[in-house]
Amino acid sequence: MKRLRKKKVQKAGLPPGTLIYTGEKTEVETKISIVDYNNEEFVIEEYKEPVNNLERVPESKIRWINVSGLSNIQLIEDLGNKFKLHPLVLEDILNPDQRPKYEKYDSYIFIVLKSVFTKEKSEIFEHDQVSFILGQNYVISFHEQESEIFHPIIQRIQKRKGRIRTMGPDYLLYALIDIITDNYFIVLEEIGEIIENVEEDLISDPKSDTLQSIYKLKKKTIDIRKLMWPMRELIYKIQREESNLIGDDLQIYYRDIYDHIFRITDLLENYRDIIFGMLDLYLSSISNKMNDIMKVLTIISTVFIPISFLAGFYGMNFQYMPELSWRWGYFAVLAFMVGIGGELLLYFKKKNWL
Image 1 (cartoon, one colour):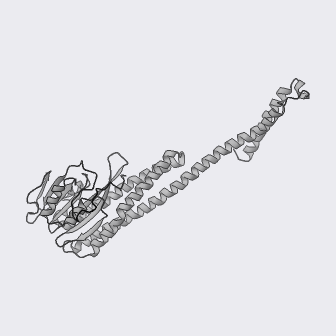
Image 2 (cartoon, one colour):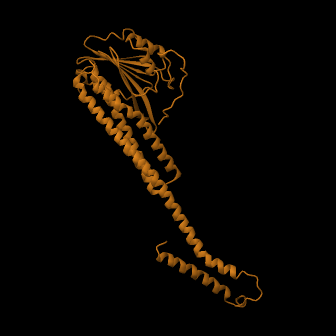
Image 3 (cartoon, one colour):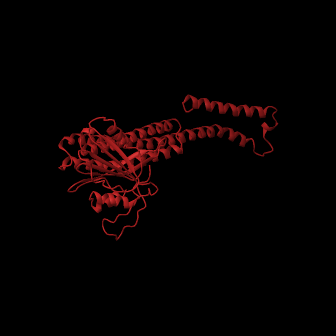
């Protein structure tokens, strides 16, 4: 997963509300996608430049404005002026390291979340900050990099799946938050598969690469927990704080998201326990492997100790040694050495040391 710490643009001393993009995705082109819909109609348009009359939502329709890429500060500022967003809100949108938060203003609600996803055919996890503005008949979403996380929502609107075409913007906001939350389950499922593969390597043949994989898993789970944990407080605020922009009938749906977040945090805790157990198992496996090696070396040394003694004894340079003139002395000593070694090996086998 990418590092959560990013190099900050120096903002010290600047007035509050100064718009400076502090992220790293400067190469991502800013795009605006506009979705207008009601129970009968659906229209989607995409732009790469400021659009006139964005704030004039067609009567009896809901407008969803999705902005991907935050490097075009002028476009973000223009959008904020059209919808009369507070400069501090725009400042938070342009700072991708914001903590998940919920703020209620007179005519809109501001929400910041963190989404996670994996690159295609890769075990690399990335995170992205998603900011939402919920108004009377519109929802605006901002995210730093272009992703396909919201494509299922567009398809649901287009194909009339579920209740989304008959509900208000508060239900659209719920659907967007819900898909971000559900995406955590997808990432955690992939982490679970990686954990199973590492466990198999750990049991069959633990190596130094296995230890590296364990530490990477540990870092991934810690990073995801940092992103997910503040969302509990955020959803709790949505449930508890009264607002005329979120209907009472939506509270049951946000309780469902709250339950999902609890399940995700429980999964993360379980994975963390498993990973720490894997570390202990790795150390035990390496220790046992070292013990096996030492046992083999000890047995070899024990077998050769008496043989080395005989070889050293008859290697002394004395003139009068009766065995030196014996015709079969060499073969007798050699057979005696082999016999001692064989007897020791049989003894070790009997004791189940081999």
